[in-house]
Amino acid sequence: MMTTAAKTRTPLLLESTCGPEGVRIPLEPDGVVTLGRRPNCTVALPGYEQVSRQHAQISFDSGTCYVKDNRSRHGTWLNGVRIEPDRPYPIHSGDLIALSPYVVFRVVDPAAPSSTTMTVQAVDHAEADATSIVTVDTAAGADPSRQRLDLLLKVAQTIHAARTQEALAEAVVDAAMTGTCFTHAAFLGPMDAQGRITVLARRSRTRGGRAPGSAPGSAPRSA
Image 1: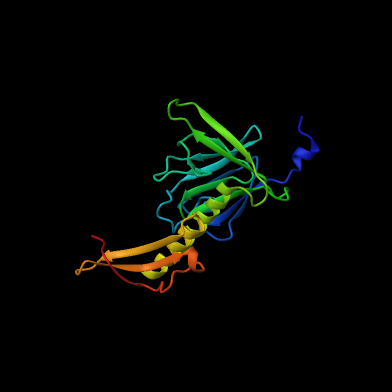
Image 2: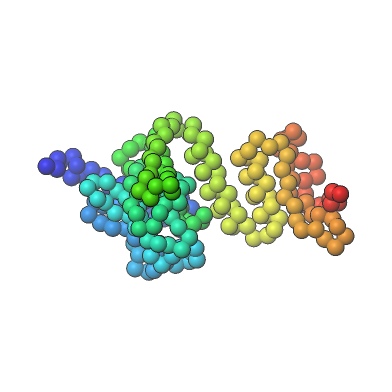
């Protein structure tokens, strides 16, 4: 028997974190949310070529919310793991669903003050029906995997928005320095006819985060 609390429980929400702006769709137990390029999808994504026409869908079964890839061309990713097509995978608050590097959604429980767990479901290809689910307890802001994923999403947006080769180089080098322990990083352009390679951007932690003379320049190719 369903209790009153269960009937009035606030539904999960699907929110965009990268790509389409303003997406905030309730995931109702008696409804199906479809995602794809077709205009009749619940979340229509006509401007994203890597998204299939009927890419994925989210629905409930026996009180559990699931995401399923509809044999999309480029696949659907759950918390960084590509899921198998035509197979439902359970999702929870805090999970990330990616349809491409530039289209990412987060599952949100509006009743919860903050998300402290992230569920990762991995597929064991040695057995067709074997999967494993690992739930990682995390303090707010303390999960390095989530931090790296957030950084990756931010970098993807910056790279996608870059209008010049120099802006792209700056974004890539900044990401390399932020997401790693490297003390030096550089982005090199193609070699010219004289055998010289253009340094489009460079950074160094040992000198205040930016190498002296880090503006684009040329460096001879090493022998």
